[in-house]
Amino acid sequence: MMNGIKLNGIKLESSIPTRAEAEDIFAWAYEKNPEPWAKHCQTVARAAETIASKCGLNPETAYIMGLFHDIGYCFYKNGKGSTCHIYSGYKLMMEKGYEAVARICLTHSFPSKDFRAYGGSDMTCSEEEKSFISAFIAEVEYDDYDKLIQLCDCYGTAQGIVPVEKRLMNVVMRHGFNEFTVNVWESFLGIKEYFDAKCGTNINNLFCDEIKKSVFD
Image 1 (tube, helix red, strand yellow):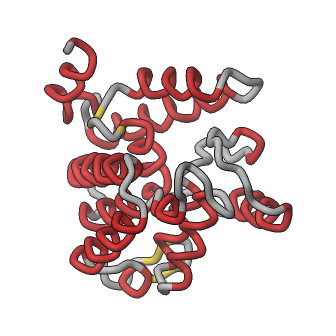
Image 2: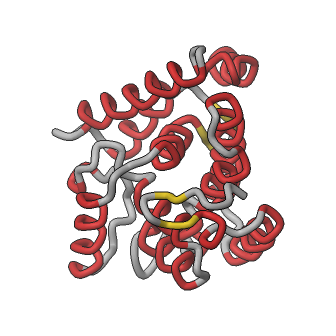
């Protein structure tokens, strides 16, 4: 898997599980908490794999990163956890030695690189954990895998792939509009334009039938 290639200094082949290993871990996580987060992750993984295959990224790496981006939710019961899902996922992946995936667990929630713009409702981290996440996001240099999972997180729902704009509106309806909302929208739409250019087509065309169904059915 991408032998010798590094992700900001992280050797991918030593810090990402195989697809079979990833599926086993994911099955374990789903048994711990069989809720819609898992279906969302599977949609994100599928979208990431499809886009990666079109724009020159490694499809299997993209799939695994998408599958694990929200794995921290496996520690949640009835919507509650001891810390936020992004930190829980990061910690779990680091414990397993999957540093490149651990990074995605944090970066997927911050397309605008502003910690204050976090759009989740589970920010139950300690002040020390918040400081760690904020510093990590500020210092990391996003690459195409970070951007891809951020984008696919916006495309993917537990029910399937939807237009980015529909997903953004859904998030606002659930969490409210704030001073960071427009900046977050601009960040997501900018990432989409970036991958549109890399793919040589509007990415919506890659999921045309599914998106049409989500809009018109």
